[in-house]
Amino acid sequence: METKQEIERRVKQKVHEAWNEFDEIAKKRNQTDNNGPTLLLTNYSQNEQMIKNKREKDEKRRKEKKRKRKKEIEKRRKEKERKKQKEMEKENRKKRKERDKEGDGRDKKKKIKFSQNENK
Image (cartoon, rainbow, N blue to C red):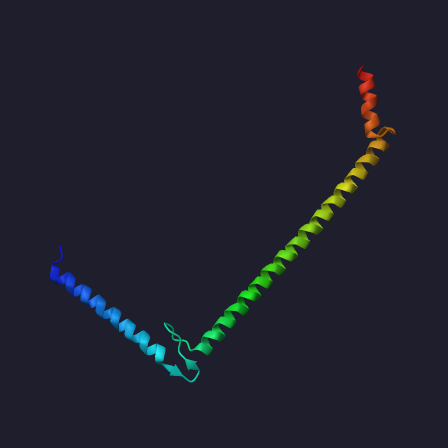
């Protein structure tokens, strides 16, 4: 277990470190360079910060456009696929109907009715 003196020493050290950080922040607040005053808690000047923010926004916008474009392309692809599927189903129905007619000259529905009448 730590002694009271060790605890006090650690607390004093932490307080000292905190005051040093506070002094650094105060220095940065008043510090300027060729690009304008340096922002608090950063190493960037205001101009550098604005440029960085603009770049981030542009990058975000590009990513959003790319995502929307992909989404739109996927939507069109799915729509084409659906249309193609419907067309194939339509063709299959036509072929089935023609096959049934060729089989015995009757439509499939008529064929079912005829077979039901025979069973009675």
